[in-house]
Length: 177
Image 1: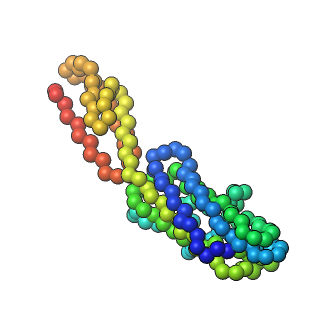
Image 2: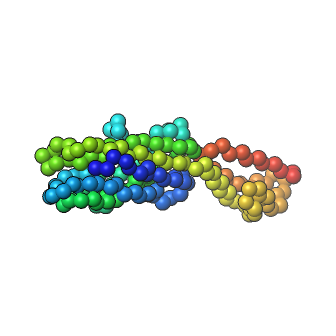
Image 3: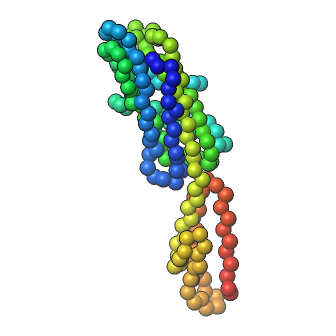
């Protein structure tokens, strides 16, 4: 196992419906002659969580076959692709998050072969706010004027305001009437 591993970095948009994924390659030296081992990925501390930003991000690390380990055989250097998967069901405060994963080679009998290495995983959650208005006509991006139409005395009109955000939002409402 090559001791110096790249940092696996990912940017997380907390309002995107798509699953977040990023990839890296783990270089492995299988040595001279035939070698039969499994590359295993185990989060330091045992939990699949990146911590920081006022919270924790649940994640999975998978190899090319979608598992947390991969069988390797042969000799020489190989590159093992590893992907991080973050489901977008988490509303996360903005900021940096990180964690460490122990990468090790394990023999068919369960013994650790050679030295282990640490893969650092870093995520940056971006600040996002989304405002949805329903029940009136609106225009503009950051500032909007809403036309509720003409209302007679005693009449009412409704406006639905929905805010999804992982950062502070300021909304001001005023009326000419």
